[in-house]
Image (cartoon, rainbow, N blue to C red; front, side):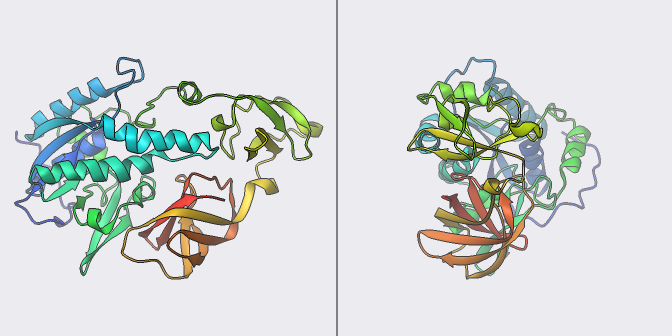
Length: 374
């Protein structure tokens, strides 16, 4: 198909020299669709791969996999690439969902997108792509890579409002050596413009905001199907019982809505926030006010570390994110070994949450990170 003239000066040099086969994960969304088109413009032989990672209640109103597959086929036909579907549901349930449930059962708040990237999109998918004879894989993530000597650095995307390097921090050097992120050097607004200009059938499709296996369904309703519930007291910092929770797994630190406690202490009008979980006594503690001391922490500890380079980072000054929707916070890496690391922040961080990821940056370079333990 002859596409309308588009200024392609934004295209960066191909990180893997064509002619080469690149298998790109296609979700049916506009990002991966435009990423596939960019690869084609760069001269690659492109194969689209649609990953089916969840099969439970496939016919429910929240599951969009059928429409997503139709969108992938339509896009592939338009830009002239082959496409296939592969089922990773068994791997997903074993490697991602089981861990997701274990973490929630322990009172922590895991990030399934981090797990999915490490175990499925850049492991099972990469293995499958290599079996097809591909030299590299690609996705529609907003991130960049840069080869420095024999090492590949993981970098933030140009569009910092869309940067997804936080979710990719568990990628190893072995994986980064075979990964291309076509959207890392352009802004989301341009992605939409390209999609409209070349007539992609999904050009106006809304971005997905749901967790891959949950979709847009109510989160508590979903968890309730898999985790046992055990009600218990909700207490204030002074030990006063002010309500009853439905199960500690259904709450996360910093949560404001859905606590089920009305009114305000002393009538000051400040909202309530989840501040602590006492798993041993099945008690949920809440405090009033966004900047309550219980919600602020100048230090954090993390384990289950993964670095995007071989070895360990040096003790020193960096920046870090303790949650995705957060600006980089200046910090000091004060200790690190093979099992754990500790960060001290210049300013206390809000609602540091066990189970979430602490991701370390050196400027725009993502060094890796770990799972927050405290």
